[in-house]
Length: 257
Image (cartoon, rainbow, N blue to C red; front, top):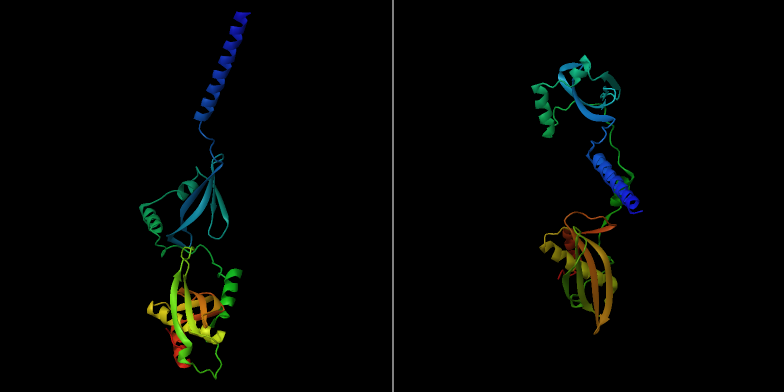
């Protein structure tokens, strides 16, 4: 019984080693070749012999056929081991110099491979353009009969806010103090003028209003207005331009501090 058991164990071990050998052999075998290889072909232009045209092509690894995509969209087929096939892959020193120029991204001598359709705006670009056309400058919402009272304006402070968005515009909050009983439009105009003066001192040309909160404290009106500041004109229905806003503040008698 024991010799038979030993024989079975030996046979099992041999089968296991044989399986390992098969796995090793399969891992060491080369990968199967692809059915086709993509190539670039530099060939002469029939209309201008001195002019070279860079075309795309495919070589069949099974039949040796070359399929070349011509500039006009047609496909030329030829045998790799033919006169035309050898000519397609014959590269002169001038050809190499031309190819080097292409690799250096100097495309001034690149031939016209076909008519290029004029690019039309995408739906998103059209929507953004339509929205930008609706943008209006921010104006102080004050009646024509408005007359500023210097005692109504009790000081303003600008504070930078943290913004977690990388590359986003700067966020600031204007805290303005006004005498009790001042209406909301006058309070917001004061906050806007204070921001415009501060933005001009920082060299920032544009701002956009985000939100405004108001409260009453110790007989005073407290206004907190948040704005974004940007170097380029931002998207929005109303955009504040620093210089224009300061001119309007001066004309309406609203202090900018």
